[in-house]
Amino acid sequence: MDKLGEKLGISREDGMSSYACGRAIEGALKSVSASGLNDLGKELGLGELDFFLTDLVAAIKYPWGEENDRLERCSTNSTATARAQPMSGHFSTLA
Image (tube, rainbow, N blue to C red; front, side):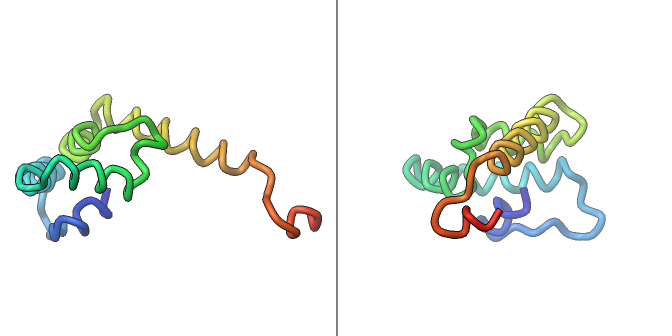
């Protein structure tokens, strides 16, 4: 979530609510072209999580909401899947 803010030049200031931060990000995303939004989603790895920028903004604005729960499940599943993948290259024989 912080990466999205960084890429848009938005940082969460002390005392700034999640909702206010999400609104600032939402406003910044309105000025990004469609191809820029696609590139941003790819850079953040959202496609791998089957997650969209709108879902991420909702998770930022409402950290107790459904989108945040879904993001946590997706990222946990993605991490578990990555750990289960065998290592490639010559280092895999060291295990």
